[in-house]
Length: 138
Image 1 (tube, rainbow, N blue to C red):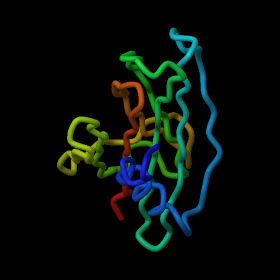
Image 2: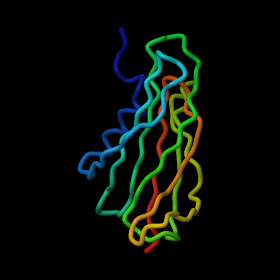
Image 3: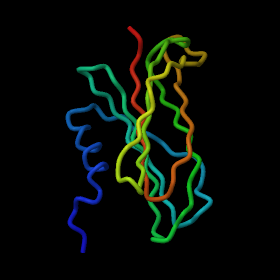
């Protein structure tokens, strides 16, 4: 029986979302592995004007090694061409920690006046989670 501390990084990241504004999300496509379940949480920390996406890949097969290619498309109420700074992290099961990238820049895209999309794409291993944090340049 586990002690509950083996998933500390996941617990810490989810608890950081307390007080955030949550947004609905939708999933498109089907998993090619029937025992995998992939989903995400999309939220905003208003005090820092920072958004977060936490995605996870759960499998009912304990021996699963299947990863899933995921594409996140965050729709924001900003004009197309808005500069966005982001970083990402993925949980590393072998070291039981998060490996964060440096902050990078991207630009929102779209053809609506006051709404655009920030796309992110990555590989998400089974029994893992990843985080994207991003903020809009003011």
